[in-house]
Image 1 (tube, helix red, strand yellow):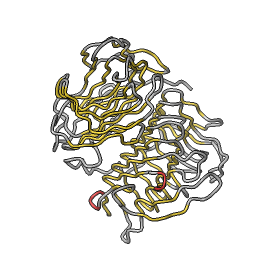
Image 2 (cartoon, rainbow, N blue to C red; image 1 turned 90 degrees about the vertical axis):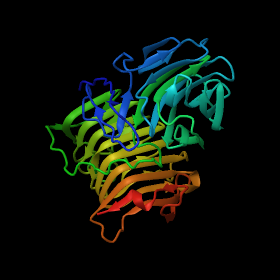
Image 3 (spheres, rainbow, N blue to C red; image 1 turned 135 degrees about the horizontal axis):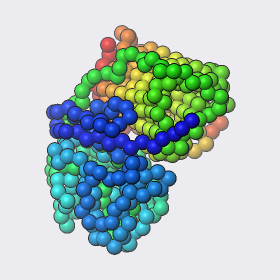
Image 4 (cartoon, rainbow, N blue to C red; image 1 turned 90 degrees about the horizontal axis):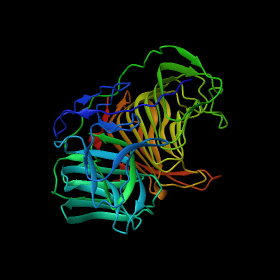
Length: 445
């Protein structure tokens, strides 16, 4: 089967508070999510759409295409993209420091760049710490910092969320800083180095903002209908996806026995950074999709979940955008690795749990899930998390259908345990700490 690399870039013509982003999806293999206003994985070999300020930048191959700044002697280098009118959004990128010249050197990500010297910046420092900063020329205001063990040669997923005057920064899904600032109300995104060299990849901007956007996003639910397969493709052995696979809405089936056996092979195994899109997974489907690292699933549909629809293993950031799953007797998405699973524009039907953070894996990570624009029908639970390990679940634009008695459980809390034991349920419901939502985030129809 031929695999092809894809390059994704979409810019909003306008992106302001109170206005719906208009997504221009020219050149994309499939329709873009209304919430994603910009993305670039540099796999096309160019950096069109970015504007440079200092440094030596080039798109190079490092497993896949990455954007690299190689001059560690430059005092301050920047690449900017997006619109100066962007207000509330979240920007995320994979960042790999290659060298630090000193303890104060940095490689980082910027949001609301009102000018080349005025912005919010999440910096990985030569000290090994990460710091969220409000930058106004030479004046730096720290909005929080944390030791993250930042080291040259390792990849880190950085995310900045802006919502009104609230700015939050995350490294590998864990919040490292949060504060309020009136420095910049709007601006572009940026990639930054100072007396350091580094690589950048998988840049994405989401118009949904942080957990408390100033203007609610549209309430359009995921598509009501399930897609019709363009053809059927019987699978006899697991399909490896090293970079990207676009199935053209073929139905893939034939792995396993359709039951809950733990030993079934997966239908697809995605290498770190890989993307699977426009695929219908029929029955039997074995253990569905395995993500060995960061991965993206776009418009993937599971007609009859066997063991699990997808298992997220070795990465830090996993995205499910569009698609749906039904007939999962236990769970749809299993989160075994660290970091954050983003589930958006998705529908789930006739299932046990939509998401479960592993409660008895061999390694006890802190795990997070963010659900936005999800529609659930005849599903017992949306998320199960382990609060003793600091797991969190955030919900927005959730629609529950055909449940007049409101029996669907939104967020259930467990006490995680070592491998070989069974986790115990200890509560449920919004608490402002682990289960994060308000009544307005849930619509019952």
